Length: 120
Image (cartoon, rainbow, N blue to C red):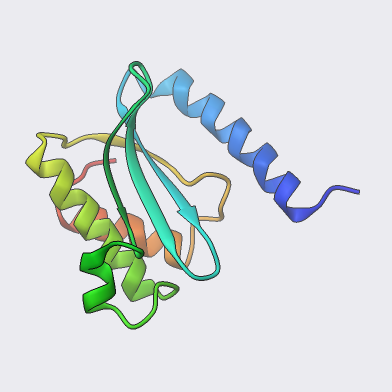
């Protein structure tokens, strides 16, 4: 029997394959969610380099958030990541939800990034 983690990994691989086929060389914004924290990175797949990252574990997030597992925390991570991306001249990315369903905290992170200027 497949566990929920194995099923998410299969969805993640299937989605990432499709993203690489249609992304036309754009950078990838990937998201990871745990029960306590949110993590997001902008990755250049051609050079295998992380260009920007944000999470609820960072100092900035810990000072302004009560918990890392809320929609407000996810929105903060999205906005903070978009600010870092703007500083490096990144405006367009492809959203990689890593097999997670697009609702709740994942959607809040995406909306926060869009509010601060990222296009995807």
